[in-house]
Length: 195
Image 1 (spheres, helix red, strand yellow):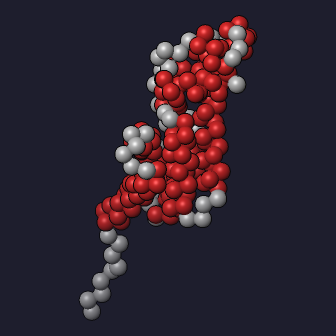
Image 2: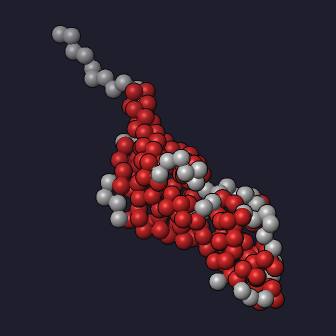
């Protein structure tokens, strides 16, 4: 209940004016009760960040497991992220932007290594590129959905259109990396028999 109210407050007003007193008031509890569960506002916000990231990543991994094609995989993971942003706003990004809460980590860092280890071998196999290239593309692509989420909140385009653009950009990058890799590979020549 306290975390839920805090999340709503951040979604509406950001974190700059947040206080334990306001959190307690919005949650309908005493300030002392809030301090009973959390020693400080920073601890409360760290707990909220962890909860939000874990919930989002669990949904994304579940969506990834049901995908039948690589495009389905990219689309389903992207859809989960953008749907989260559409409903919850940039709560994760706002919490991550405060070094006291995030420890200075990049907003896209939570479980990033696990995600790269999961997705890179699939991309390498699907696109016929070396694993080091696939890892780089997957790792670099992590920032794209966050930018798409921020754009979605401007409400200039609908969720489906922003999702389509994001998926096209991720898949297009992989296709271009594959094309570059294939055209820059050393030639494999058969010996020429002139006799």
